[in-house]
Length: 173
Image (cartoon, rainbow, N blue to C red; front, side):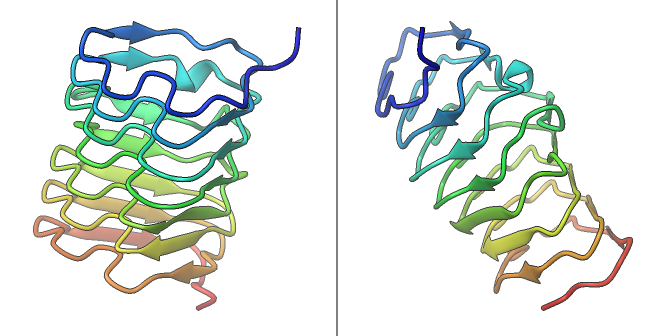
């Protein structure tokens, strides 16, 4: 069969969904696919080695139990970008490891108010969008590797516990 990559608003506002296992050949997740799935605890993003893009916005916004206290390791995916805003807004992640293929972390507010987020590790020539991590009040450690292309205005605004930023190689802009 064809890879599953054209769905959008798939489970938006489903308040009963707790676990979701997407097909391993999924290449894209489109806007609002899981928005406000308030009981969603797990989705197999880490296993989606063909996942390249999260297009549009609000993919997991309002999923207040998703990855609670866990580290989301996207390093095995082929993700290149979170296209727009509010991708993980309010999701209670503990940390995120981005893949080396990542080139863009949203236009605005990608991880807005992820108040449990403690650390992020960004590899590759990535552009960090405006206010990407705004309001991540538990964020303490940021690792930026390999010539970060750009850091947008207010990228870490309101990150009141940020105590360590490790820039391994230069920031281009």
